[in-house]
Image (cartoon, rainbow, N blue to C red; front, side):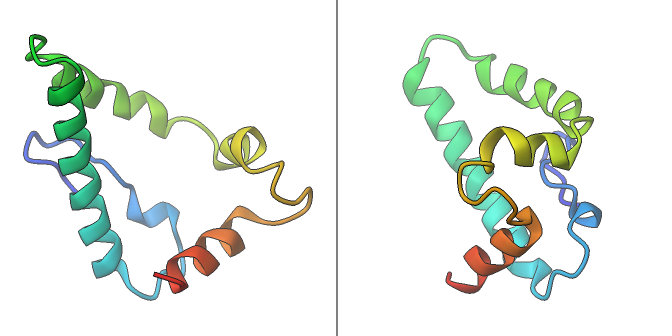
Amino acid sequence: MTKLTSGVSCLPLPCYVGLDRPDQVEQLNSLIQQLLQEHARSTRPTDHLHYSRVLLCLPALYGINCKMIENLFCKHINGNMDIDVLLKEMLQNL
């Protein structure tokens, strides 16, 4: 599991069984954290706590079932495509 400097986990790796390159996932996770922090600073320059509040929301997001996320965001791709297969194909093309 990857940890942020504040101790908040950003990407729970055990959820993704069968990853061939967890080091690459960790690098991408680090990049995402940096980009999120930059975005929070650029969109709300006077709100110094915005990034911290976003990080506090992350644990609640972990409780969301993977199938629910799949139904919400990936159903339009192909009605019966499995999200695990889709993610593996996307990561292989990086």
